[in-house]
Length: 377
Image (tube, rainbow, N blue to C red; front, side, top):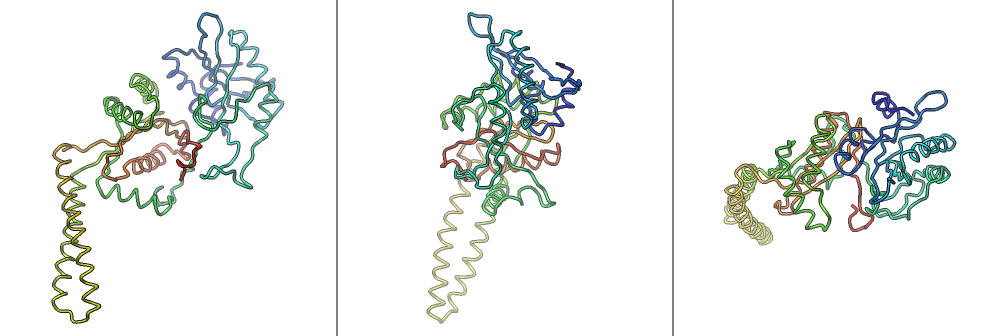
């Protein structure tokens, strides 16, 4: 067993199931509270590393016993059944000496492939051997809930990031590309926040938690996470806001375009003799009247928003942690009152592109999706 950090990270780089949650840096975040930690390398008989384990300990009240937990770990080769048994046998001896009564693991393994309708993909990948090998090594499986009841979610969505020269958004389907592009045209602006912006995120977080009925992470916890990980380049805070100057210009342009078309058709109407053509133009004019009234009302609303939020209104925020070529959308918050802007979609796409360009991120884990089909799409 070894705990040399450089060797630890070097081993992690070789493993497909490496994850930020098994790094010593993530352990620092968690041990700022009620956990303690170990950072371990399990060595083979040939003195080569075969497993990495960042293990957290929480003391049980009233007794000198600890729960041991390896978040999204252990990092090792789960296809090698005999090696896996040896790794966990070694850890068992070590943890027993630490007065740990058990070890909980939830490794980052792709077990089965599902559609967004919660149906197993016929012919999709099937890594049942992972599960069998873990059970053979002595672990007991929790009931097969796929939601958020475990310490880490079992069901998640991982998006491979690709940019073929036109931007990541261009790999989205037509509907999603449209939403993102409209958000940008109508004043959606994305930017990186700083520690000083934490109260802004906290306010968004409280609104979202109340709306969606969950317990939000405290500003103290998020601040601790940011202070530990941001200096190491492992977390960033992102925001999307509405720039009402841009939105006003967009709405004004739509009104002016509609007004010009209205004037043109009104002039044409006076010169027409064909009844069908006259009827068609009259319908177009009536439609334009409706749109002009709508655009005028929209402009008045935007002017009011601009007066209230001259620097723009923050409508969405996100914490994204990264390790090597992986990113995790760890926490997100947003308000629904963004004028139908879909700013959150614009923010996520901007984050993906930024991480792809700046950090070489190639996979984006949405870190927990609901098994409820109503939330899929």
